[in-house]
Image 1 (cartoon, rainbow, N blue to C red):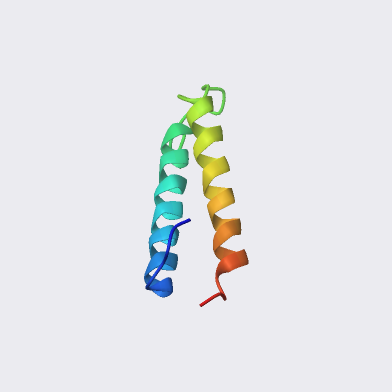
Image 2 (cartoon, rainbow, N blue to C red; image 1 turned 90 degrees about the vertical axis):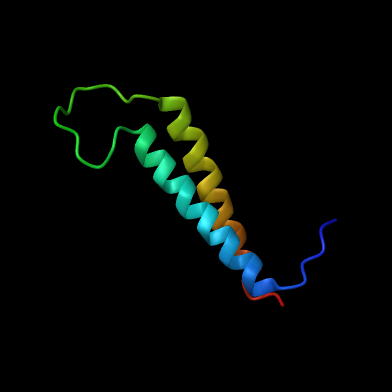
Length: 68
């Protein structure tokens, strides 16, 4: 079990990591502006993994956000 001494800092750290995971997922999907709609994703596996981790981390942040 991990002991957290500064809960607000830990929540900010988790939010930062969730943001980075979202950016990684966006990069794996090919970026925000695709020139050709029929172009396949550069990394479908990377997109799925990073989006799954991002969503799970966001759920964790909201469920345990009010705890102090």
